[in-house]
Amino acid sequence: MTSRVVFISVLLLLWCHSRHVLGSGDSGTGIVPSPDRSADGADLLSVGTMVGTHSAMLRQGSTDECDIVMNLSAADRCAFVKATPDCSMEDSFINYLKMAFCLLPPNLTPLTITLCIIWLLILFIVLGLTASKFFCPNLSAISSSLRLTHNVAGVTFLALGNGAPDVFSATVAFSRPHTAGLAIGALFGAGIFVTTVVAGSVSLVKPFTVASRPFLRDVIFYMAAVFWTFIILYRGTISLGETLGYLGLYVVYVVTVIVSAYIYSQQKHSATRSSVQSSTHAPELQTSESDQAPLLSNGSIQEGYDSEYRPLLPYCESTSSILLNSLNPVDSRTWRRKTWRWRTVKILKMPLEVLLLLTVPVVDPDKEDRNWRRPLNCLHLVTAPLVCVLTFSSGEYGLYLIEGQFPVWALTLLFGLFLSAIVFLTTSNDQPPAYHLVFSLLGFVVSAMWISAAASEVVSILHMLGVVLSLSNNLLGLTLLAWGNSIGDCFSDITIARQGYPRMALSACFGGIIFNMLIGVGIGCLIQMFNNEPVVTLEPEGLLTWVLAGSLGLSLAFSFILVPLRCFHLGRAYGIFLLLFYAVFLLVALLTEFGFIHI
Image 1 (cartoon, rainbow, N blue to C red):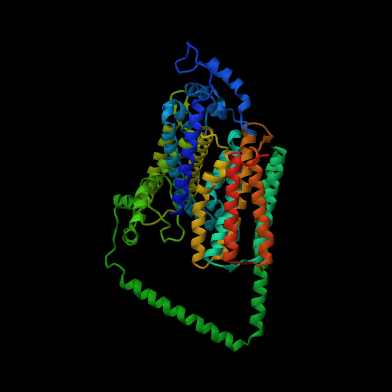
Image 2: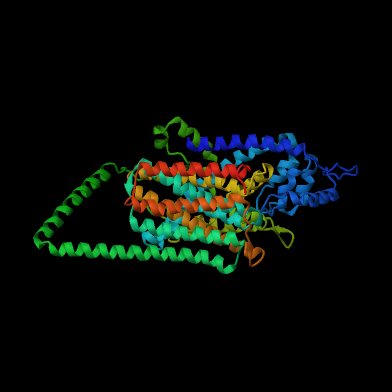
């Protein structure tokens, strides 16, 4: 309910602002169209003249030439979008700017914005479903197969699974020069949202005493990452060494977590051993016997229960029924005890879930058969490679013609059919093969491609909304992108706190955003360096960037000072303070964006 209220409020805000901007843009002074207008509705020569004339109208700190399209007359916008490289949107499947200015008439632009926001909500659902039901389980299977400790898995695979939408969105945004502001706004905005709204909500739901050393460790590392980013934004450039420094800082953080966990376990083990040695030997044997008795009793009860309800005759499910049941995302027992609202949302999400079930294999090490579904897994060998080649770089390589005649996607289809036939003929429905772990690697790659493709579309839609509504990328990043990627984490952390694990919820708050900032900025800048130049230019989009950085630094400073002063106890008063801090920050950010606060 909270997420719907947030997005409806944002939709109303954008609708009102779009009517104001579109009305002022259409009545603006545009160049009078010449008689010899081209077929696209505007003379390209006059468009070039308009680019030079309106170059001074660029927003302060913005290097995106596409921003000036709203300063032109409605008749000239389509030709300008087609002639401007910054409006190309090559990394997405749909050119939303061309759809807004060329496909539909200008008087239907508010309708276009509404449809794009609905599509944006669907993409956020895709990101959440793919990360929670496909990406994370496969990461869990990989980490358990590699026999990683809980600490290593928590700060690597678990952090990647929880922060996949944020990391991929930041990586995609940073890899494009004209959308880097989206990544900065999203990373800083999500950091403020998590450290204030999420942490404050956890404190309100379940007051608790936080673990002192892990809390101080996470806050210090996050403050270092924010300060580093602030320095880079102030300088305006980032080199290869500084980019690798982001990744190196996260490696140091992982090593610190592992070493501190090892020291803590050694201290706990030595304390336990000393307490055991101080006790007598007779009570130790008595305790051991009393501990074993209930286990044997429970085991016999469970064995009797299983034998009583074990079927008399073995039931062999057919291949077709296995395939149909595997593609059914609804559990009948869960469906009966859920409310009508849950059922309505489930029905709306079912097409997306079926599509993901058809293309992404999932390995579950907790199940006896490890989620082996022979017909569906064989089908995955056909669909998964097709998804990879058709989503990578917006399908550019999948549609490439080999020797000008045979497409790459057709070759991938034939190769998948060949592998599928081999696996189907050499396996059975009952027993997973020895190489079943390979399907978890395949599921990890395919789910990552789905998340990357959805993140690219999200970034492109937000860029279009920023151009059409004359909003900065920072504002869209700290609101729509940050909220869309963080609201799911907010609800999950609050649920964990209600179940009696507030420390775990708070650790997830800080550990995830450290990973998102360091890995998102590091990999995104590396991709941009690989595609363009060895030095990336990051120009802050006006005063709002510094409001973001200052607010995040101030919230971390408050946490670093106030929490130890309160003896690391987080109560309801502190939770209310954090929520009020976020409300004041959001108000200042909006006033800065719309020019009420300026230098």
